[in-house]
Length: 339
Image (cartoon, rainbow, N blue to C red; front, top):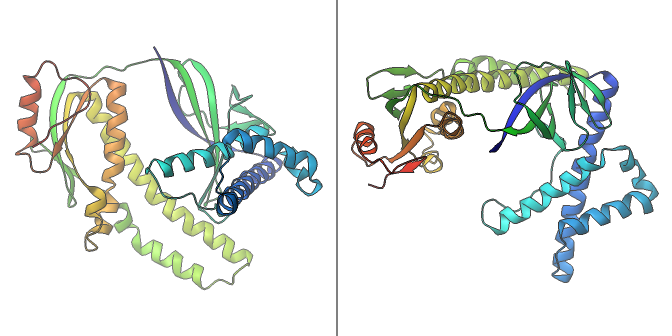
């Protein structure tokens, strides 16, 4: 059985490659916004819609028929098409009530990305990307045997470059130690298990809030458009990046440890969106990143072949759920118990 797995690596492009990356980011953003405006105006004037393939044809006509848009020929064509694919998916998600109405993309967003799915390969310590050639990157992890089906280039607010690749290969399920555990998450301590072990909350935002405030005050005093303001903006972005890195590193280590050691994991099923409406606790809840914790636990449990019980908050205890699952031999995969 085939499976797909994603990897993220730091890239070190040359100055010429950085220029091409920024051109591609600008072009994909331009095409996305152009066709979003076109689809909006078409519906308002004629109550009509266009398919994704119709936009592909219109994009080709724009590049060939209009001289002022001939510069789009210098950009990876698949990156432009995938940008229109993202726009079409945004509309589908909106009509399925999974997201809000599509919005225009801004060049000032903290993270700019574009994707491509052709002519991507890894040669030693370099990755080959369309229009960029061989780009140096840090191969920090071993990839599964398979075919690269997609690559996403990211330029962060801290002026760093990353590449995320999706590899399709043979399924490789990892073993676990067969334990059973129940977890209650909290704010003062991140979580407590049924054995009384407590995992401390790193609280990176609270610990670095003073430094964050200092860098923000320095940025506000810089003249807009100056080089010093740009340097200070990058310093501030790196503090934000440091906070996010500490949080993600903690969550990845904890979720991997839980999935490696246990066959059954019982966790609370929390309404995090509703809890964030409590403005007195919203900052502390956001700093704990419960949503990201449950998301990582969900996909890692499938990789390690363990079962995740999603227990309503009204249920007596996570330990009771473990007993219930242990005696229900027909239960497999991810289960939710209704109180």
